[in-house]
Each structure stands twice: as C-alpha cells, then as structure tokens.
Amino acid sequence: MSGGMETPGSGAPLDAGDLDSGFSTRGIFSEAMGVAPSPPAQSRQPPRRPAQQQQQQQQRTVTVDISKHGAHINRFSISGISRIRRGFLSDLLEPVFQSQTIKEAVDETREAAGKLRALGMAKAVLVEMDRSGEKEGALDVHFHCQDGSRYIIKTGVDVGDSEGTASVTGRVNNIWGGGESFEANYSRGSKTQAAFQGTLSAPLDADPRKRLEATANQAIVANRPYSSHDELRRTLGVAYKHETFGGMHELGYSLSWRDICNLGTHASPSLRRDAGHSLKSSVGYTFLRDSRDSATVPTCGSYARVGAEFAGIGGDVQFGKSHFEVQSNESLGRGYVLSSSVHGGLLWGARTSISDRFFLGGNTSVRGFEHRGIGPRDGEDSIGGDVFYAAGVSLLTPLPYVKTDALKGHLWANAGQCALLDSRGLGKPGSSPGMTGEVLRFLTSPSASVGLGLVYRHSLVRVELSCCLPIVATTTDRPKPGMNFGLGFQFL
Image (cartoon, rainbow, N blue to C red; front, side, top):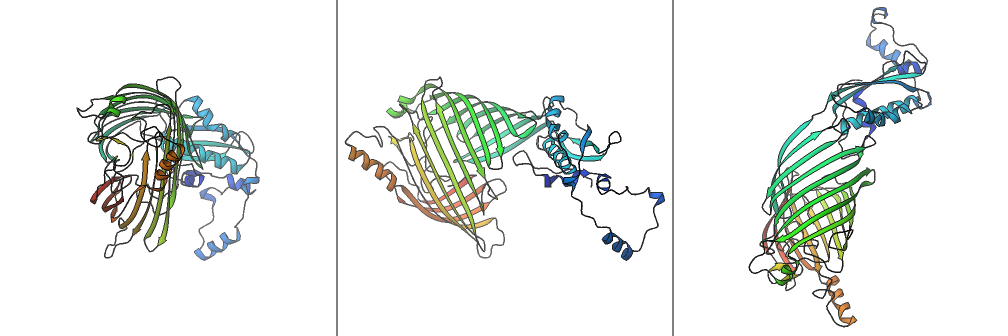
C-alpha cells in the first residue's frame, strides 16, 4: 500500500484504522507464512489468462494470525520533517521498540505516525516496514513524511451570546521540534471592544491527547445597555488537558485581574458597590464529552459539560462555583429531530461580584427575553445571580417543498430562573418558612416562553428566526415578544 497517510485531527482519539493508506510491509507477511518472497520480474512466468489467474489465487488463499508471529523493531529512520527533537522522538518510538509481534509492530508504528500527523509536524506519512538484514526476526521501519506547515494565519467571524466578533489568528507549529505551538488571536466585536489572547501549547509524552497549555489574555467588554459599566480583564493561566475515549478533562489555574469601570451616570448602587479592581486566584476543573454529529444543528448524539472553580488561593475574592450543561438529540425519522437540554449553576461565597455571577436570557439562552433579561436587577442594571437553571425542548421538522436538509421548521419551549443567594434574593431576612417559600417559588415558577420559526444550518453557525411568546415573566424580567433573530453555536 502506498500514498499519503490520513489520520485524525488533534481533537479526536487516534484510530489505527485511519492509517492504512500509508503503510507498506513488503515481504514481511510472506516471511510470516514461511514462503519465499515473489521472484524477480525477469524470472516470472508469462501472465496467465484471467480465469486461470483467479483460480490460482483462490487456491493460494492463506489466513495468517500475525499476532502470534514474534518480531521486534531493529532500526528506525525518518525523513521529510525539517525539525524534530531527539527526546521527543524517543518518547514517540518507545512503544514501537517494545512491540513483540508483527501485529504489535504494525499497530504501534501506525499510532506513532498518527501522532506526527495530529501534532501538525507532518501533513502525510508513509510508513515502510521491511525485514531487517542484520537480525533474524527483526524489522526495519522508515517514515517518509511530508513536512507540516510552520506558520498559519487566518481570519474569521465568530457569533454567539448575542455578539458578533471579527478576529485574526496567527499560529506557529513545531517550535522546538516536539510538536509545540504558539497561537495569538486578536478580536473586536459588538460587545468585546478589544481582546487579545496568546496560548503556548506542548504535548506530554509525545501524545497529542495530553497537553500542557499556558495562556495570557486581555479583554475589554462593554455591557451596555444591559448594565451600566464596562469591564477590563487581564488573565494568566496554565492548564493540563487530557483527552480520553470518555471525553476531555481539563485541570487549570488562573490569576485574573478585573476592573469594573466606566460606570454610567445612572449606575445602580449594587453596581457601584462592585466597581473597581479585584484579583481572582482560582483553580478549576472541566469535563467535556460531545458525541453529536453537529455542534450547531445536531440530529443525534449527546453533549455534556461539567465544571467547578474555587477562588481564594491568594487574591481578594473567595468563592466556589459549579456549572453543568447537558443536551440530548434523537432522530425520530422522516427528518424530525427531538432535542432537549438542561443548564444549571451555583455560586457561593461571603460576597460575590458581578464579574463572577450567572446571567440568563437571550436568543441563544432562554428565547423570548432580552439578553440578560431574566434574573436580579437593580434599577435598569442586570446584576446577575448566584444560582440559575434553564431547560429547553425543541422539535426540528422538515419543510414542504424544501429539498435541502439545511433548512428546518422549529417548535420550541424554554424555561429558566436566576436568583441571588443573599438578602436581595433567596436569603431575604425572615423566618424559615418565608425563606422556604422563596426557594419554592424559585424552583416551581420559572420564566417561560414558547415559539416557532425556522432554523438554518450554515457551515459555520446556526441561524434562527423565531416568533416568540413569553408566557411567564417576573416583575424584573425583560420579555421580548415577536420576531427574534438568533445567530450562534450553542442554543438552549
């Protein structure tokens, strides 16, 4: 076999089955069967007629269990990669040289070639394996590589959370010959006035599924007209990411300096109390599993994301925070798809800040309400909540006279609630029965809306046009009935 090797990207587990197109074994299997390799071309018999040739092939069919034939790697060589570190190569080839059978040798060399491809060090890899001329039962392996791209520059447009953002990204691959990369991103948007992020990433044990990342970012976010302030954030962080067949695990530490600034003339007392500088030092863990066939308009599969953060290791804020998102999608046949999702979160601490709270409402959240239109308010300012939940169910339907699957009809229902835990919310002073009543109302009386419309699956984003009808709203909510337009990646 020959040709360029196709392997999975860095975001998916490596699969040996994806590597077959780049593997050459020459006479190894002939040796395993105890027969001599094919004779040279000049000594072969004249070609037979097709019927005779087919009959002879059928008679010579032999099943060989290569897992029982002992073999080990004697020598390895590689060509085509301009930069590769010796220590990285040792980690990459350690499982290869530990193989004891032909099957193990084939599988481990496929895996090693796939890692080079996943790390961007090679665009394609042809693995050539042959009998060693030095030792009996030994194999020689050579990787013929097409060198990966060192520099990548791209531009793009991101949408989500009722914001559109234009960005430019530059990336340098394989910096020190071990699959390391550095990526810098600059973006400007309708709410994010300016944002910069730099990320240095390096694989551990030459494995693209285990990575150590260091990040630095700065963002200026304008929160008007939902809340009368801007926020400046500067953050340094390190994280360990490990992808398994069960999902992605991320454990990290971050140090974040926040500044609530540029308060409006009518800013509320709650917002003025949170104004100024704060320093957050926190550790966090996130688990992510995604088996959907599409991130924007899935027709099957599920999505789960669970995270926790603890702040107070230094800095001047102390809190614990947890959140989760769960989504399920099921095809009902004939183009109908039923989707359901549940989100929730809890923030607890002696004194929480607007920078850390949850917000609810909007075209990608609980539809039929303004962005940040559900939950606590002080005057005209949305100040966020310490606890929230949201749930949604939707049915995608085929449209008559529409042949494309990209455009669907959409029926949906959303509900959710957001509240503070202090005296302004669920912790209002009073007797225990009164507090129990507040919690009961929070759990049993969510803000809710229903609607119908259209969903279009673009190659980059999900586009929604919905007729929304809020059916339950509190005095502090901001309902938004009528036609609403939504653009983003993740919807409730």
